[in-house]
Length: 581
Image 1 (spheres, one colour):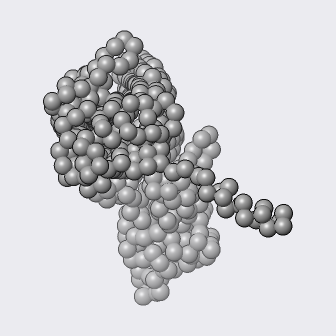
Image 2: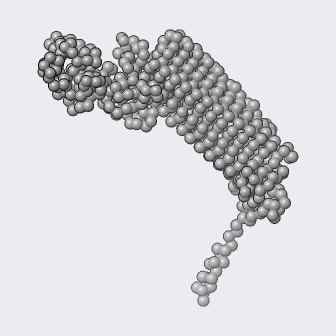
Image 3: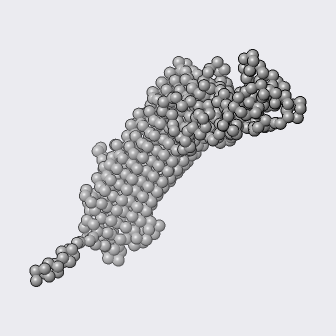
């Protein structure tokens, strides 16, 4: 009997679980405020379509307020309250706001010192999720659309449009943590900092799959991270504007971010039309496009000031600066790393069409291609002045234009360390620099006969294992120069053309004999002298050349009669064609 009684008690024990209640507006409660007043932690307030002119105060409760018909039909109107549209301040538990348009809010007092915060929503020391909401036409000092202070916030699928604030016109994050995904920041205006988004006070952010479009501010048109830390990935930064620094966005004051997959296009600022990275910030910027941005002063694409950031696998294309550094401006105290970058078609009016370096900067520039950049002054590819000492390793500097010094330009108290560099205007006495056709296409990619192929060194410390597209290095016998690693071995030639004049004639046979018996230097590629492609240059090669010319003898093996790469590496001496050691 005891066993039977115990088994009957089991379902009674588990049936005591209590779930939150649902409260319906307007079917059950006339206003959202009334429904919240009747709610307890864990309850849901389900709001049907309509326009609600009231202050939605969560009153310290961890509840969910949901517009069940979505933001297009469910409007929270803040114009009549002269407060924030909504306030979330539950010190314990999780709160949620979902499915509303929040408009015309003005904010409430918060912070130390006191200021007006969160025109649309203010979140104070709470854990909250804001999902599928539209914030439009809200105004505040901090966070026109939304302000979160020392909170744990998740923002997903929201739109912040045409909001206004002193800082963070779309969103302002003061400390705490914030995850932002699939959000749009459009046409917000900040009087001071962060048109779309502003974060400070060591806030921890994770930002992914967001769009920052047509926002504006004094600094950080699209966004501004001041002393914040976190990650940012797969975002579009388009058409934003800053009066001062960072048209697309600004990292400053010890910000620490890992950033990848950005498209930073058509932004404008005084310095750093695309991005500004300043004042001891540490940013690892990778796998991104920085293009068509402009600066009234320095750094059309990127303005890097006083930091030790890394710039890897970037396409910096078609940017412009009225002063210095059309693609990048590296300035004032720091040793940034620029690696596997394509710096193409940028323009600066004064100096440094591709890159400008100034004031005690010693960047390492590894495996970069500086192609078709332009300046009206000095240094079409790169300019260094005022205690700047750039090191370039395995780079291509090609087809750049300038009034003077088209490739590299050295200013006062500055110098370059060039290690395995293919460069226009190369010093013939420099053993690690040479000038031959890089054979780049319109996108800076080398052709199969590029002189950049297999001319790199692998001995410099810290060289990348892959190229700009993730292709493993090397693909040939040695690393290629520039941002791209290509298959093949480069150094095209016509077999039998020992003197490198693109034709097989009697002079080639005579040069083979002079090479063998008189120590005459081969002016072309030694592999071309090997007529029979057996891995050796012998008298037979000279004899077969003469036979071809005068007796109708057999032609040599490929490549012939047009230039091409060596097709048979079994007996190849292609390493004898290398220009650099």
